[in-house]
Length: 382
Ligand code: CAA
Image 1: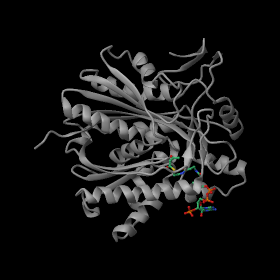
Image 2 (image 1 turned 135 degrees about the horizontal axis):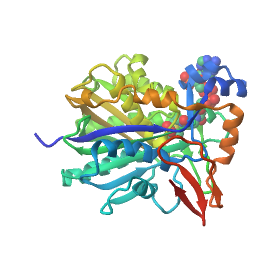
Image 3 (image 1 turned 90 degrees about the vertical axis):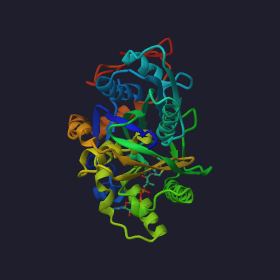
């Protein structure tokens, strides 16, 4: 047997605050069922003024480093759509905050929500070459759209850190995957904007087309048939998106579709909102934490980054994974968030645009790391 390569650990972090979508529905004069049922979301995380992708990414990565130490880690890959600097990789700040060794390479990856999957693929390449290495992958995002738009309820914030290693505890990632790239203007963020521009309708069809295209590519490369995949998790800009895509796949391959098949993977994302690069991996975390025994089950994982790049990977859950799952921890994290009124959320939203002006941030978050502010144009964390 070739050596198994895959996800050895997976940890989740999110923002300090939460906005209940019932409150947003009331403020926007929308039936709350549109949000809960129509798009399949209940709430979204909002970062405190002293939080960003670095603090959330570091909080997730700290859990992984606390459990496994730094041995073998020579690469840190940080994936994000919502980068804090056009030049310096966010992972370099995380490297400093966590006190990682000097003999490490660090780089940031971008392709909308797909970047985390690109990081996982790069990590697999590195450990295939030298299985004694382990790669720290961090995916963190703050999903920001303009307020009072159709996209407003699909915002969110969160991070995932994964240790990619040989002989993994959680899930072996299989070598074949299905790929699909199409140059489409469905969602993008020009360099002078801190909120994304989106063609909502186009983005939904582009996502579905990408999923089917990636499926066909996987099939043409001898990938497993639908009957050999026990569970699916998806990138979830809003959880209803996974249902739309999956319904189309069921039609495409001619099998019946039950919406409930996907529900466990929705559990955390319904509460965090869209976390762009982290979204798929948060869904995987929910499945591993909350589903019945998945030992030996094959999971299909679909990643979509607008613009657009899609990838469908498969992985097989490791026999002893239950000893390493963290059931309960994420529920505690989500329950600990401090609720915001719509008024205060909108104030934070307006103040949330990136700036190079000198500024001090108030001390709000109770997370392990905080964004202290900007001086001399540079960001400072503690
Ligand atoms: N009760 C129950 N359901 C209701 C309802 C009610 N009272 N009122 C409306 N609905 C349903 C609608 O019927 C509709 O369902 P279907 O999609 O099944 O037809 C659903 O609620 C949404 O309603 P609309 O289509 O009217 O929604 P909208 O136009 O206001 O906005 C959206 C939806 C386009 C997704 C918007 O939220 C948006 O632009 N979001 C951001 C873009 C996005 O997330 N795109 C996803 C693919 S791109 C991607 O994946 C990358 C990424 O992360 C961004």
